[in-house]
Amino acid sequence: MTASRLALLALLLWACQAFAVIEIAPLSNAELEARYRVLIEELRCPKCQNQNLADSDAPIAADLRGEVRRLLEEGRGDDEIAAHLVARYGEFVLYRPAVKGNTLLLWYGPAALALLGLVALALVVRRHRRDAPDSAPLDPVEQQRLNALLKGDDREPHP
Image 1 (cartoon, rainbow, N blue to C red):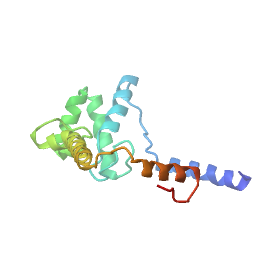
Image 2: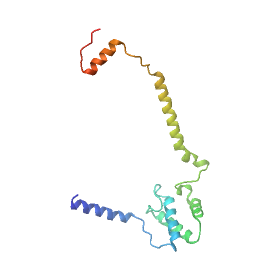
Image 3: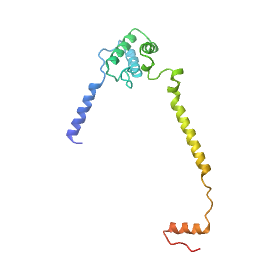
Image 4: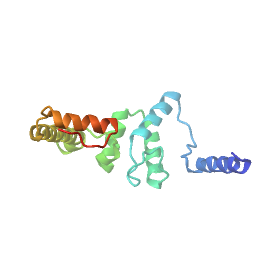
């Protein structure tokens, strides 16, 4: 790589840091900090839809990170914090919602579709095998013609 390309790559990598979420105040202890990191990775931003709270720079995500920090400092458990956010924003804030009647399709739909595809594939293969003509041995004239073609001799064999 040339020096200008390396400089451009370094500049781009440096600029990407501007999009990272910066936490200003640390939590009171390392255990809470570790739980905080896990929670904000597992909770989804209500505005960004496909970003977790850790990656989102939306104002609502910043508010929710602050709420998670506050609840952790109050001594709430991880399940309590998740339940608190679900009560306010719905199950959408969970990347892995609970298995309930309204989420069965979400949890088991992909497996059902894969199973359906395998059954369809098996039926197609079975039908193809059933409809394929039986391969009978070649008669002597066909065998002679095949041998001639394989040798590169395009002349017709004499019967």
